[in-house]
Image (tube, rainbow, N blue to C red; front, side):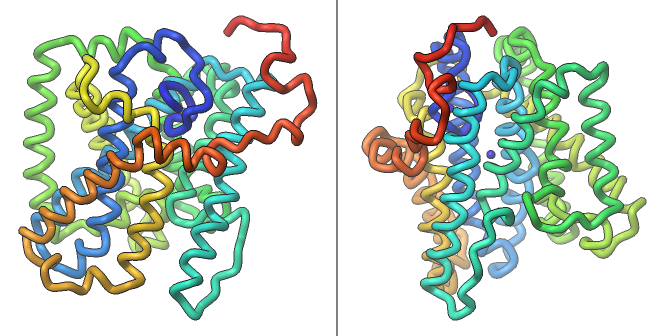
Length: 361
């Protein structure tokens, strides 16, 4: 779920020169995508190994890493007004990769399976849910900006989803349950993030928040199913009453907001050795899925080494290394035709950059 502008993971659409020059946002994206990759590589082990510490770490990361991505995506969507050039970028940078990468993942999984899953363009395949969600959120951004209380309305929609089973098409349940984070991002001003980044006591409080959250995650590990954090299920699908779903989902939502704020407070604001890699997070987000699926299909996770802390630590280090490697410029250059397809032939000349009268955001 840009180099420094929306969509968050895509390098196409840098909309503000201030954001483009600020290493803070590249640092945030890079650190968040590293957490995404680690979480996906841990996932097959959290129930299989039965180790409490690993599940606790997984629960902690999954409480905030996608909310953080989504909130920043909303923040950088504030200038989206659905102009032709913006719509073109949204289609080529998000919608078309959603269809393309969903198809590739389906074909890849079918090479290891006798099931031969059919290609369903409107049903996201694993990680591609974020692309279609981002497309829908961004497309509706101008509407949210016209409302008096957009975050309240988005939160109400999220809380209502628990009463309905909406199906898998377009990942509509996730779209609505993660929606408040995007809308909150839309309502933020640069001064809000600056306050998080620059206020010393906030950084100290953020460390305490993560310490408390880590302890809570360890306590919850045997009690809380990870499915609650995927935000893709209704009360009936989680086999609980709607009241139970409402209370627990609201608590997870609040925890996600608090941890997202803490994460953003701790992200370095200076240029670091990994800042430049933040421009390539789309490559890491999409490509790592194939490597992880290959490990699952080849039963690598059955190896006893991965069921011990030392093996899990090694897996984590390798996951971090993989995430960083996939963000490098050579990988981005190779993957560009699949991530940033140039489809000028698909659009009328008026929507192609350079053929428009410039407009102010």
